[in-house]
Length: 108
Image (cartoon, rainbow, N blue to C red; front, side, top):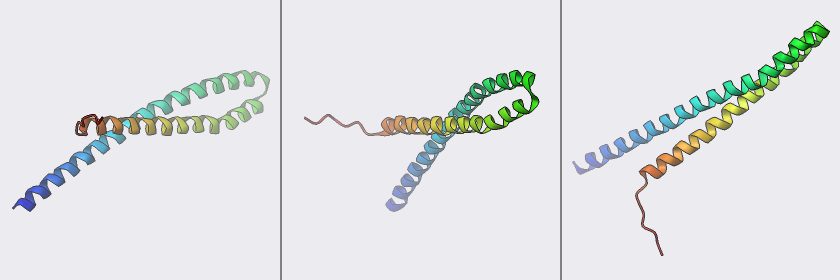
């Protein structure tokens, strides 16, 4: 009987840890997606502006400019996503680990 109680306490603890991990990763995904949108807009606006200016010069020059900057926009969005998501997941995990840690007295 005592073994079942200890086992159910362990399962409850694992379920709580799993829920916390899912919450951390969900927060990271949301923060990363927001950062990717901002990075896409921040790098896409100058591209569109340059392309509009390039249309007055020549159509092929404007197309080449757009084609050559698309990988830059995608790379900026991807980098922003992964950097912000990673930092958010680590910060949330750190916050949760300190929240659930037993309070230890200072040793002299």
